[in-house]
Length: 124
Image 1 (cartoon, rainbow, N blue to C red):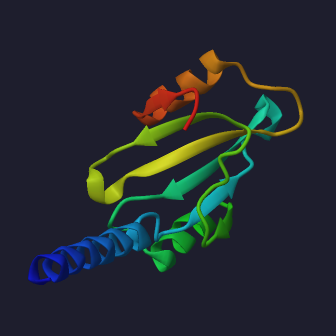
Image 2: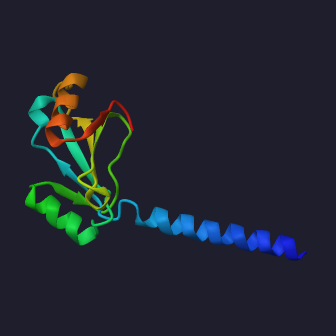
């Protein structure tokens, strides 16, 4: 009986830690940037680093002329993803989405990611 209680307590503690960590991930929200729409894609930027909170994310997005959301970027139908890690605290993730006016090539997206100093992936 005592072993079972200890096991249940451990499970509860692990679950609580897991939920707390997942609640912190992406707490900075996201920003939809349309500046590249003519090139066949738009960028949704997730503020995923630990230094980002909603206020910082919203201010960064407004400064860039984007549309802020408290939610993470949608990844369905993503053309590709670029992770930029200045450091873990300032990490952000670009999700490239079709703008509806043509479609950017994987090479163009990878190149855009490289300009940012990021690591490109064709999917998330």
